Picture 1 (cartoon, helix red, strand yellow):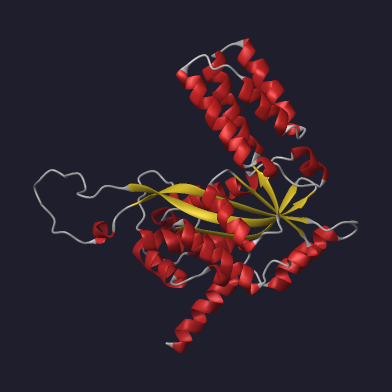
Picture 2: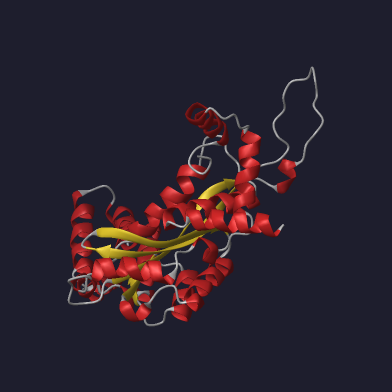
Length: 324
């Protein structure tokens, strides 16, 4: 209950359902104890379980199923460790604003999932408030543990244009099919249309025609059109240059017609939904500000829930108690 709803609400609901009283502070402490020190391998399904899910999707098909790797970040509200310190009360005085300031930090994560005729079959998620090097290390642990049977699937990576993402992909999965998120491309095109033509029918016509060319794999035509475009303002010139650089840098990742024929997805909706269900639903609550360690532990438990490994996390906690 605590990983689904705020602790106070979980305390009330738990008491109503079980008749057992448990304070919200006790719930908080117990939750953190269970999640202490969890790593990506602790919450990941076994290779046998992942192979079972792959086999179910592959049954009756003439080609290997597609496993997609999505990498992205989601901003979550955090607070400094100094906010955890107790301070003496000031009876008789008006309440003052907390002396600390919250900060929105990037909870970077990745997700492996199967494509089954438009349906997503989840395999593995891992999200933490971490930098790109720490995410790369977690991804490396998954790779070295052999959890994803790359010889049984067609691995595809769908991400936006962030250079740090493709650096890790190229290092760990150099043979994977790399796809630049089509919908991020269209955002750049809309910016060009607005800067060049304003809010006009001409802007809409240009965007629709250019998106169609991109969708059918004619990225060379799109780049040529941008190169020939005469900017009407400094803003338009900057937008055109940014769009051209973006598409040119990722040109080999924009063969969308070929990708569609191969059954590969064009958008990063799989990792976006993971950001929402794992990070936003629990951490982005009204008035909630998380210390870094608590956010790590809550995210790890929510990953275990969606990975189907909640029971093995509790088995690990029971084993630690017996050893202590």
